[in-house]
Length: 474
Image (tube, rainbow, N blue to C red; front, side, top):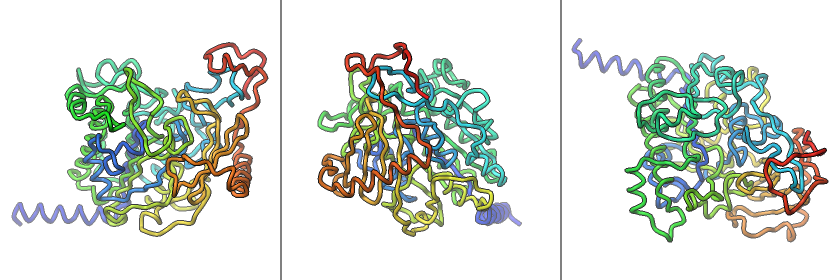
């Protein structure tokens, strides 16, 4: 047999084996990445050719959501398939619990780690013979609650840190425990480690969780990229900050390198790639005196239960399953990921823990799912000026319940994606019925509800770090 014939036979054998093997799974999660921060969702400023390629080759969920408007609760929901409300993990860790003491309501205390008794998607997949890796931001607990304690065979750079202090080595070592090369960019380093994991595990099923620290603050891109975007920025486009655009390009390059690594390893055709974000883009923040990004036409951003805070870019590429270039309007939420990935991996139903999310494998195969109620619970004051609230969506209708006064807002997302026209005072019966279902859900999940604050003081409402006095959050 000639060398050429031998190589062709070997390649055919590998390809045949890949077709019968359970799919590899790659979950790429970008931090604070807005729904409009991609080319496929309409950005004219940010350059995302590799993410757009993923969209062309897979299925875009136009109504993809995060489980929370902030990071840690969404990450807990991804890992467990449960509502953050049920987990009582509703705030970003080291974050909100009681930083404000004179607000209208007292924020409930949130858990500071994902409980070990929760069964994670990594544990489900590892029990099925998958090699599992978490490379990047964890933000679900410190020692004793790290990825290595929650089902991951490989854990790199993930601990309690919610962000890095600097994206260039060695400065990142102040908050991120990960070695690099002088001047190396953190996004690039995480990608190199992810590529190494793919190459070393090509012979067995693997689950790669790649949660980037980007594009969270500090807003810090590579200088040559910043210069390029500053030159193309236009004031009339609300997305015009070169530093942030440079960070997005580095994230996009990371996606391209991961896709190339899958192809080089010969496993691309048997790998499900899920790309998403932990919450919406940050629109309340000015960095160096400039707005970071815009989520328009969506309302507001991170820290709010309006669409800008919870609607996120969501793409799944699963060769021979998802139709290339397809788009689905079925609403899916990150608490659905665990059930979806478990079904894709063939985890037997009897081995599944209780999950609140539902699998959307049917949608990936082109089947329409049944309309259901979707829920969010964020009972905190966010650093982005969000107010304690819960929300639900059914079909095109979305209700928001604000805990301070019990006020409701109702929107028709089909005709008003920007949530500009509150219909609660017009469609009174519909608003009341949805509120009843939302309140029933809050009771069923044991959701923590903010209490009225007898020390409310408008003049000191957002003073940070003052003594709580006799008022304590349970």
